[in-house]
Image (cartoon, rainbow, N blue to C red):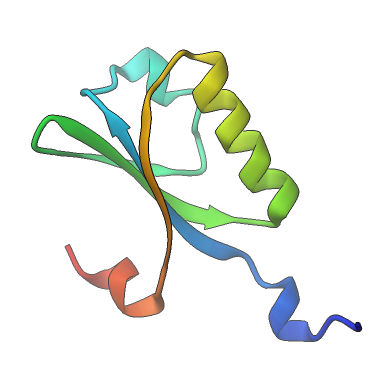
Length: 81
């Protein structure tokens, strides 16, 4: 299977983490934008490739955070508050 140019573009993801993350914890995710939603924190942003995605997940685990949801988001969802 060959890769196309479209396959090499970063994908956007949303990570829902239980609780409100403080500034120190958020520094562990410099490429992601954070916002609180209810009792959770949403981290959104472009992830370069599958290795980078696994890196974010490893950081979540290393910090002892509870990942509630992970989803790939569309262009429309990136611009919708």
